[in-house]
Length: 633
Image (cartoon, rainbow, N blue to C red):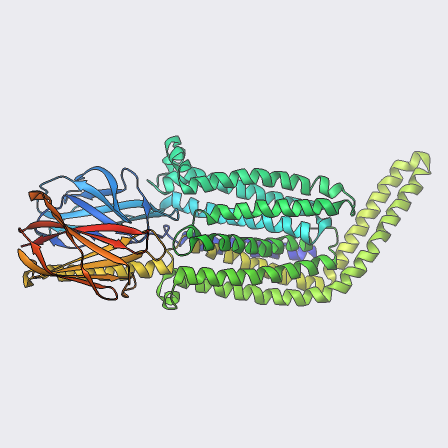
């Protein structure tokens, strides 16, 4: 029976790995988790006067390098000067040379979002009139190419190693303590540790090139590695390596001193190993939570521990499932029915925790029902939910096989000591014959091997065991694909961020069309802001009518990223004409209604390119100032 099953197992594993490879390779470059929500000059706009700087606004804070922002003239020559700088909130700028000639200019950006993922893109604006340009923006991606593929593969293997390491150790310690002396089980857990360690080192080496040039030659650049170690993602990877050193000590005790103890002596050591193993496993899970989706955005203080529980539940379930599969297929030692039942209970608890934490994560990352179908993150999440449902269904079948197998396992375990007595008897009789002791010992070993093979054939022929094997193998197959989908999901822009970015861009486009009609006697300025506090993101719009020297009507509108009116404590406006050293002229508008402020007879003494600075306060301590220039008069 074993010979007929093994080729099927190998074929299925190869097919599953191919499916996972297809998922990983078709994922493309890592999607931006910080989206570009606005720019000045805006995308596609034609301005009469060349700007002195270009600024970009993102949906969250990003990390900059010296080459993060570039401005290229129609011939592809760089016209920016100096280093990129933070304008305020989530807006970043770069100075450009003065007196730029007319034509179409290309702005390219490559930054790292707060959740450690690279963000890249490009857009164009024109001075005077549009022109042809030699700059191609179609290839501006981040996290792509060979380095991007290797980084995605490393992420997948790190998740797989974590699941096997934590779940396998939990299965041995909590469900089948006799498994500590089983060689295939030892190889499984040690293999998980080696996989996670190797993948972490690979990610650490690739990180600099992955978020930068994307060149394979930069993988071993020590300067880039030094820069990576100073980032949040680098610190998380180094912390993971330190925790893996503690995990190595845990493994050595579990498969060394622990296995040699008597059952009564194991109790205290079991408690100590359970506490220490839980701390190390939680720390390893936190190395993901502290640097990725959970660490930024809404309710980060709650999201990170929830993410840790989610990862531990996944590892306990799927890693324990892998260990059970190894015990059923590779172990010569019979697994007790009590161990299978205990794992069934542990798996049920893990699924409950997984569903509870998954619901919270889905709400946090999507924000609306429409994001399920309207965003790539939501679509992948639907696939993941479907796979989890399928996995739970197959697990239910496994529970039925487990119940039917229990009596069979009890009978097999009762017969196991008989084999030992036969072997001991053969060995004793051999010793009594003096010169024939070697031959007798050899016969005893052969008899023991034959008895073991006979018992294994008997177990394999049991339809209940065979059914459990098939159902557990099917669970493992679904789990492998589920892990691949989850890996791609962690590299995809959350639905909430994507929808907020779309709303902000729509508001920006509306503002652009309003500004284009400046000849009608009004100017509209639209600026995104982020005060840094809870619920601190939004868009502020300032209207001047008739936008001429003398008295003007000013209206200020504050909206959330989804376009709804935003009721905040305070808004202040200041006007500055730097060319004539006038200002700032402070204006405190009156609140009209939710999200709407107004001021009458705002005096503008001189025509020119005025800087309009708006200070937005969303709480007692959270405020920010954003600005934009407007031609008035």
